[in-house]
Image 1 (cartoon, helix red, strand yellow):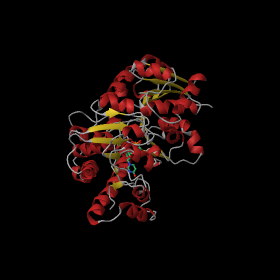
Image 2: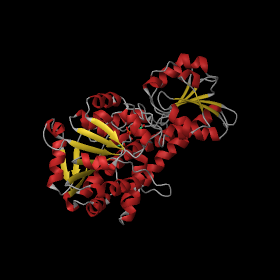
Image 3: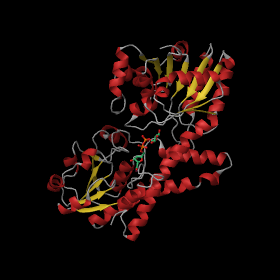
Image 4: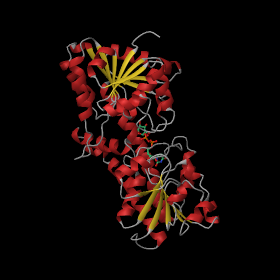
Length: 441
Ligand code: UDX
């Protein structure tokens, strides 16, 4: 390989750690930076601080071949790299819907003064539109190299659980920049993907920032659309699963992200649509995104509805009742519990006086830290022991494949709420269960 081979990745959370390991896998020399020493120690010894299928192998392979290293030193990173990727988090602020840009700002403030030679800086963090231009101006003010520091923004579309695949084979690459040097660097870094005919789009900074939030807003809207249809189906006695299937054959609609159930959670969709609304407000176009308020509200209502169905099944209040919950992560194949619909439902039921026991294949340690009020079991069968109602809240394959007869032996009452439309109602009912789902008769 030739070209800009030395890459730094600033911020080694979910996005950064995946990006760093995958860039090394593509043959680049990569230095990952984080301010969290514990995270750097773990990554340096080949341990991932989170669950992501396939990533640990990529990490250990590239640590071993020397292409991947980690540090907490900005001096080292500035000295080492020709291209810096900013991959820090942009969580929701504590006091509003807006994005908290503290980590982006501190990366800029720390890196800027150390950029002594011409360098390319490419942001990947999801940011409110306008952040990239501000960061570019600030970096050039701070850097001894001045406008020799050139900035681009390249949003990241990776899904948790598919991080490696989505980074190595994304469905598109977007780079926002007006600098030919940034574009050239990005083409060089993306050579393997461009060769596979993966679309490579060059836009201005603002458009690139918007692409990311627009994509997430669309996905959230699609999920809430089908969940709104689930609400109507419930009221009308229709079956939203059949409805969704029938819609999916129209290829203008498509079947992906049309899964009705408990709705979306996680570290991205909920906070991204809220930050997008907050930004539209600042830009004076608040009405343009007011529909996202409904998207959010529909999504929240699914949680309340799930609790109502469970209450009906046990016939009354939750006080003193025993409830088994299957699932804690916000989606399967992840240990991420940020804004997890499953844990939200579980902890609400617990606050209503029930004894709630949760099982999840990967997320128990994370859940225990945030929700000490819940009980945790090490298997699906343990979680449902003596339960008067079972709630399936995350669609892990292990739950889809559950044997209704085995579960029936453990529970006090064979009542199940399928919050993800993951089970076959006919099969479960035939095995003696009272089966209820969202959006189905
Ligand atoms: C999302 C985007 O998909 C990704 O492109 C972006 O980069 C980050 O945000 P992720 O947060 O990993 O990725 O989760 P995703 O797989 O999109 O699922 C989001 C939520 O929607 C989950 O809680 C999932 O259970 C829910 N979901 C998904 C549904 O309720 N129904 C569906 O049909 C699909």
